[in-house]
Length: 103
Image (cartoon, rainbow, N blue to C red):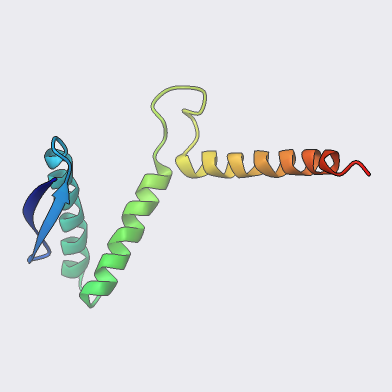
């Protein structure tokens, strides 16, 4: 494990990551710091905890709206894929359940 010293919204943190993942972690820290600082600077959200939660929700929403760049599901967001899988599971469960207890 490698330890990185970084700063998020002015606060120092020591974070651990695997060797070779330092750049990705630094990019994630930079991205999160930008989100949190923008929320703080907007004046609409007060308190570090609330800012962190709002930033996490923003990042999660961005992640769920990302579309795959290629493949059969490329026109769907991650959230849409998840919903489609859940729907398929429900159909399979409804079809397979009667077969499990035929008597």
